Image (cartoon, rainbow, N blue to C red; front, side):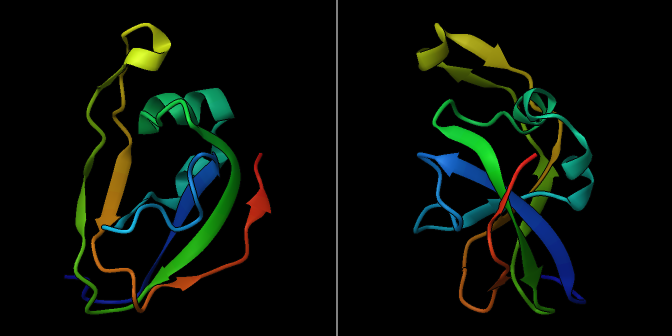
Length: 108
């Protein structure tokens, strides 16, 4: 549970939408904006369908339930079974109502 309001970001594009799937949204910290797309894709283990060519800021109100952790390695059949290492910080917000989503911007 968030004790105070926070700002996070979401990278999306292609088959990935601005607010993710219906069962929740994966976000990350703003420091990942400093990475190139390739490094970002590796650190967040983004699926091949997420082009990460757009970014949006998301305000998370105090009291929001969320989970914070490290991105685990992911194996993608679409990449010939290649394992993407992960290691970055991710936030998962299962209940999207209440999130304040900024306008999408091109990334990088």
